[in-house]
Length: 287
Image 1 (cartoon, rainbow, N blue to C red):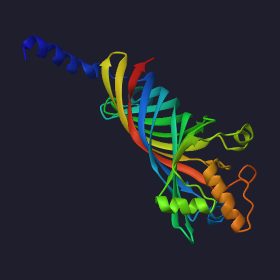
Image 2: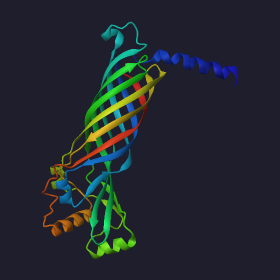
Image 3: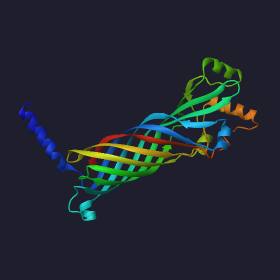
Image 4: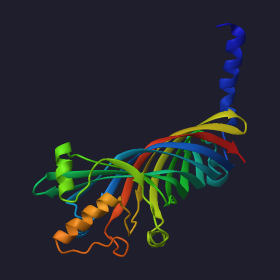
């Protein structure tokens, strides 16, 4: 490579450290690419009510974006450090984002004639609103940031889509159909009525750990790369399920002398939690 190409590149690289954001307000715009593993929790009594011997989670993929406003309390001014080579200071951030949501569950039961029945249901929601506040600790001239976040998440999709399938063979599916059970694969829409929208708990809590690396580009802009782990705690209180699953629960309830009414009977022990993990890519601007 010719010298006239190498020299400008070297000058740019050497000048990057001069632009690190040391204090004041910053505004970040970020994309979050994440895997989401549903972690359902429910009491045995409510599992019996639903006609399920067990419930397990499934893995999905979600994308979201957020805007983050941060104030950096620099180590020199607020903590009397002589430099920020190691400890750069603390930051207090507020986040507002929107993106996708995912919930996947495997429900299992046993039929005397058919045997073990596992039903897989994957639900996709969009949009989902995220809001949170974070405490950040900066290191290495504010290049590296470790964060702890608390906040909330609010699903806002009145018509989420779903995929439903099972572990049954064609013969077993036909046997189920003969008993009034329909577990043929399908995709569809979960229509949430206005009455149910008022009853369902709209907000869940989230706890998040993150690490970010900020690479200066120009005096007022940095590139952000990072990763995060997040646990989302959500108790819907009332459940919305595909009609096939509702019909199966009602039929099972009739066999056991139980009246199934999902619209008026809350499932208080049911938590539709999730464990999210992923990558962060974005831009950070000096305000």
